[in-house]
Every structure is written in structure tokens, then in C-alpha cells.
Image (cartoon, rainbow, N blue to C red; front, side, top):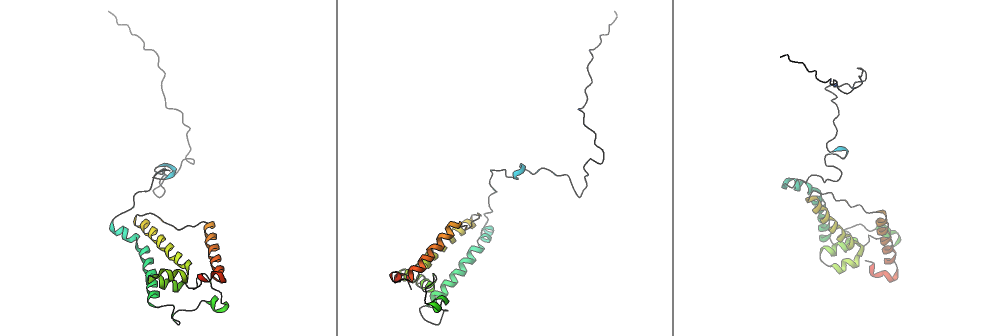
Length: 193
């Protein structure tokens, strides 16, 4: 018996796809000082992606206390000022300087009566505080609300900024201007200290 050789069908040889050869001048140089750039994790939006939130803030007592340093320092400064005004009565002459605008022109500015208002406010006489300077009382309350919001946000590790718009600033300025004008007119004498 003779074995006949059967020829395997011809299969073409497979090769790697053609890649152009680059000369040494065109190849990027790599060194220890300048490693090759790696793409940023998470793509172009950083490690958190375009819609992801930042990691949770550190809620350990020391970290929370550190975040509360500035709000507590601000409150301490304001409390010290209020304590001084509460103990040294501005209704008695000689303790505080006179308003320059009032001394020169006899016109009440928006701040006139503010110290008397603060003294009455800190001693619990709120009607007298409103009579001395109603705008100051609104300012005291606005400060308290803003300070509470700032402190709570700081304790939770969130940023809080008071960022009024131009329209809001113009509105506040207009209200203070009207307040100043009205308290200097005869019918607005109830707003004068």
C-alpha cells in the first residue's frame, strides 16, 4: 500500500498590519524626568465625572472644630462689641463720637442711632431699638440669620457665600436712601432717634 500524500490547500500567510516606520527624530523621547503623559482618571472631567459629587467631608470632631474657627471668631468679636455697647450706655454723652454728618449738617444718616439701637436691643428693649434705628435692627436680625446659615454650612463641610446680585445691592441701597430721607422729614420723625 502506498500512501498518497494529499497536499494541503494553500493558505496565505498572515502578517501584522502595516505600520509606518518612524525615524528616531519622530519618536517621542522618554526619560525619568519626563514620563509619558497618562490620561486623567475619569476622562476630561476629572476623577468624579461631569455629574458626580465630591467626596463626603471629614466629619471627625477635630475637622468640624477647625471649620468652625472662623464663624466662632466672628461671633465672638460681634458679641464683644455688643457687650461693650450694652454695658456703656450711648445715651450718656462722652462715651462715643458724634456722627460727623449730624454734627456738621444736622442731617441724620442711615447709621444715626445705631449704637442706641444696639444698646436697647442687647438689653431686651426691642421697641426702643426699633425707634432708635429700625434699619439697624433689621441688620442685627439679618446678621444672626446669615451667621447661623454660615455656621451650619461650615459644620457640614459645605461652602457658603453671601453673594448678592447687583439688583439686590441696588435695592438695599435704595431702601437705605429712602429711610435716610424719610427720617429727616417732619412726617418721618418717628424713625429718628
